[in-house]
Amino acid sequence: MRRLAAACLASVLLYATLFGCVLDRRLDQGFLRALIEAKLARGAAVGTPKLVILAGSNALYSHRCETIEPILRLPCVNAGVAVGIGLDYLFARWREVLRRGDVLYLPMEIAQYTRGRLATATGPDAAIMFRHDRATLERLGASRMLAALFAFDLRAAVVSVAEAGLSAAGMADPRGAAGIEVNAWGDRTGHSLALAAATRGFILHLPPSGTTGAAITAGYGASLIAAFVRDETARGVLVIGGLPTGFADDAPGPDVVAAIRRIYVGNGGVFLALPNDSRYPRTDFFDTADHLSEPCQIHHSIMLAGALARLLHRRADIHPDDPPCAEAVGTDMAINAPPVRAR
Image (cartoon, rainbow, N blue to C red):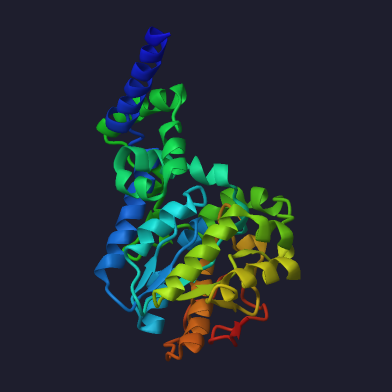
């Protein structure tokens, strides 16, 4: 029995050493880690006050700090990365950067609210923390540490070796070859309507989301967001909840909007909605319901900047020649700052 116990302990130690010190997903998770660190570095560098837009890839693709910053005359950081990154991890990292007087806008994807505890604990950030950021992992507690320890398998080992070879050979993010990159503000750029043509058929046939207000309220992600809103508000950060971009023919029901609103307003924050509830025709999107194409990203950001300006009592430098989204022209939205609904 002692030999068996010793063998088990030795295997666990070998496993932990390999994945904690030797093997690494240098490409897939390396891209994510580099993106997170670059955005945190910008957040720390621009000082206070600043606007931080934090969500998953909805923030990355559908919001543009490069557009919003000069309109509000307020430094802006696009903190969006991906829905799969654990909110508790992102919140722990951004808590170190946010200061009293900052503005935090959260256009969280619906999936962020309904995401469960297990999915949160076993996302790619678990492996990232276990290999590169054990200080944050320790702060998140024993359950997260245990989940991170056993977040690896044989496939992860094989892929790590393969990615090490590809990285040594100079392989980079393939999106760069198509001109799709991330700018200095943290915005995704280059995701044009022309490139979106390749996924147009897929976009047009995506089914409705089907989320309910009850699912939002009961979600583990919703509890994490509520606690973060409460904590940051207590620290003097203005937290503004918003709706994610999505299809106009799949608008969230009143119960969903009300549930999201309660998470922010009920914890000391503010809830802000644009006149169109951030909904656009399917032809305005790039490759998913969360990703507006670049001209529509710019258009949406102009609309949002005007709304934020009114809420923050700042003058908005919006000009008549600011470019609209090619597919949104003719809708009931104007380029000038829209009326704000802070609900």
